[in-house]
Length: 268
Image (spheres, rainbow, N blue to C red):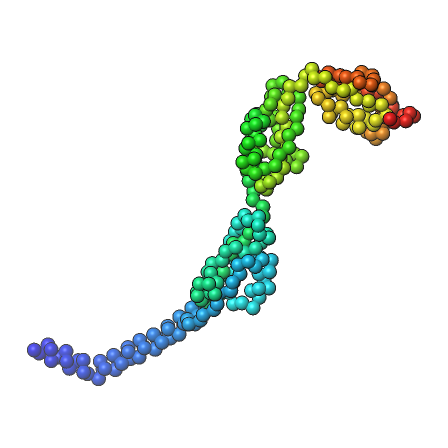
């Protein structure tokens, strides 16, 4: 009983009431200040519309968002050959006009845009059969061209794969629809073919003519050729086997030519 009386006297004492009042004032003022700071830092109550950027082009974003208080970021691209490259396909958050979502100043709109080129890994086709290689290229939507090279060991198989005139390694990523050249081995030794007339051709022209034949060796003799420039202008004066109408030669043989940089005849 005495304890309760002393506690009551303390609570209603002037000193306690002053201290309690100060604590209450500090709590109220501190709460108001904190609330104001949070409202300022979080833009409390601010509602900005999210623009509809779908269908717009990435190249125009700087102009479209010039007066906006929102930011934008292109996350990645999606393969879509039906759209102009850079067309915006997706955005997050969605436009306010479609989602009724509002955001605050400084919010970043995340975008995904279209690309017309899809990179696909080049398969490893060397030593694979021609039919298998063609099927793989069709499945991966590559265009291809076949070229043949004499070979006893790799008859009907891929000897080399090329892209833009250079060998391409398996796993290299190139655009879908690219043209790939496959060099196919073909056993053509002993095939009869027409003998070309090389008289009057330059050495490069004659070499190319023989190279287009099946498995032929080209041998050049040009005593008057001292420099590479001489070899480029020298013309064939004779050949072996000698050309004759309806003449033929067996693949796997060789054609030898004699050339002179001071050729005085008239090319055929």
